[in-house]
Length: 269
View 1 (cartoon, helix red, strand yellow):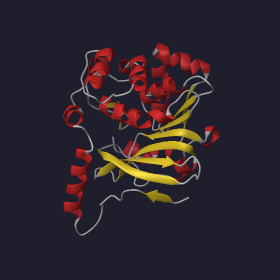
View 2: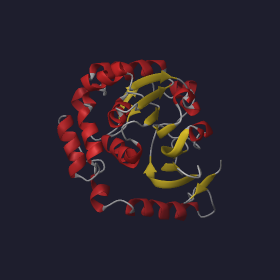
View 3: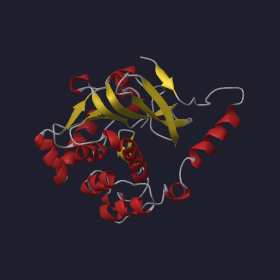
């Protein structure tokens, strides 16, 4: 089913430079002054102070997101616990990163209405397992399920091991409400579909059709789109509950590692 594009990205044209300038201004203006200024400044010394900083800076704005983030200690998922609460992305090996806390918070707020108890969520490129665990807390109960999909075997193992160390996430693993699957994220995970929410943690040149097909009616997909090392934008796709039609909008400019083959990712190290 074709996408209904609510806003086209001025990506390639003879007026590329001026168009991109206008787009960035619109992106920045879509955020409150406080959120623009504090996006990279929400640091903490532990998980509680990190989440409080995100709340104080109006990046976390809902009780559901705040509660779930407080339940998942980022220190279990970063390589260096001493820097785990700094508002910056950090390397986790195999040319992958755990995103900056403010970026996780932005995405969770975008998806929160699709992260209700009993819903199903797919986290493509689950990496450290952190965001998958947060979303698992949000959908737990009433048959809810969070699936972390990772194509690098060492990261797949690390994500599950991190959750085993985290007491709250361990409970979700044991109950079967949180699972990790080894596979190509571009293909999704058909077995547990359709999903009420799909999060993609790496930038695709275009949103994979398999992921769109696995999005449930009334569901939301959030995915960074753009070329590796080039201009990228965070895109939000909704499937209408009644008609099943897809609509797309651009949220903001971002910079992510690429959604690619295992060989390409490992070659970037």
